[in-house]
Image (tube, rainbow, N blue to C red; front, side):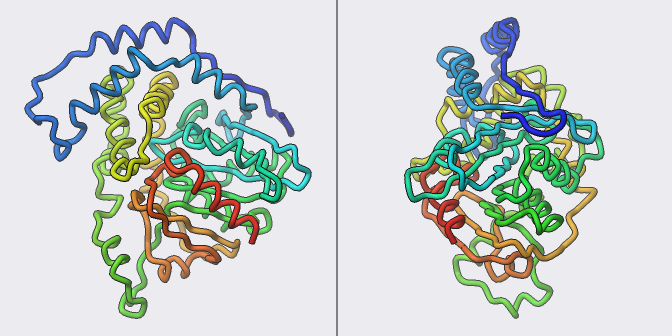
Length: 369
């Protein structure tokens, strides 16, 4: 359903010539001698890259995936000179609350496909939601330009919700969706009735001894900081340098994105991401040519860091064992009005896809408070 000025219906249709071309490129992948001996300590192991590439070439059905997504209403609109794409599933329930779900990198709207129906059409007695899933600027079918920071994205998404007719709504996010969602709540407390996060970050207190950590929290804090990870260092400094290669080689894109999809999901506990999910995600980045534009957000973020403030909207935090962007609750309470804090035993950075039942149940529990 379209609402507001300049909101247009949208469907995905990748030209047949592009589907044929990527098959040729995948089939002509130039191999190298595996001096790394399939060891993940060096980066993407050859066996993982081969499995994803061969699944894309021989088994994955893009047209079936496309048809699945197109069964969900989609829109595009122009905001601040950008084209913004979003999935928009309205609930049939009169008491439904609007809920915007925000992905990160290397994610997309695909992250949330498993939860749209359970959230918008729940069983009797459960809260219902009008579900909005935007493609962040530079991702999927949303465009990007220099100067678009996560803080500006928050303003753009607030305008999107206004155009769709929602004056009050809940926000859910992880990865990029966490700081963007927090900024939306910080700037528009009269609009955001609740904030649900599955990753959370913030500066430590100046006097750490005043907020002692549990043994588990000490383990969290011993992990490498996200800003030291290879993709962050590259994206925040030279996002154009690698984009040429990834935009020209589907096998290279499989290695770069596929490694992170695998490593950042909770495959060790048997709830990782399927090959279909990984191929669909890589293929979306390929067909939309967004390797460089999606990386630009890191560069802009590094030069426009968020300003600390206190989010007054009720906030729920759902932490999964595979998520490495997290701070202790005592630290988080300095920035958020936390009313629900959940620690789960399964799931990674993509919980809506990995453990959709747990993800949905936690949002429902929060909404029912």
